[in-house]
Each structure stands twice: as C-alpha cells, then as structure tokens.
Image (cartoon, rainbow, N blue to C red; front, side, top):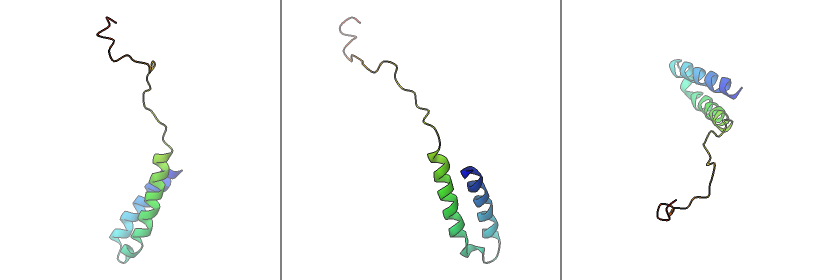
Length: 65
C-alpha cells in the first residue's frame, strides 16, 4: 500500500510542478512521497547472507588446517 502511495504522490508531484501555482503545494506532496518511500524501504526484508560457521581460526593456515 505504501508503494502505491509513493508512486501516486510522485505522479501528483510532477503534475503540480507543471501546473501554474502548483509549486506552492509541491513541497507537501514531496513530503508525503518521502514518508511513503521510507515506509516502503522500512518494510523490506533483510537479505544478507549469514555465516554458517562463525567461529574461525585466523591462524589456521599456520597450524596445518
């Protein structure tokens, strides 16, 4: 839902910048876009790769491992 608000507010922002006098309302619409974008980015999952074996011996190559 936040993505739809972000895209919609971006379209309205472009339309306001083209319309005469729309520049006065553009900062408010841009604020709505930024809030919706923060909601979209905050809802993304963490796709980082975790280590399977976090215990590592940095000197293992010396010990013949």
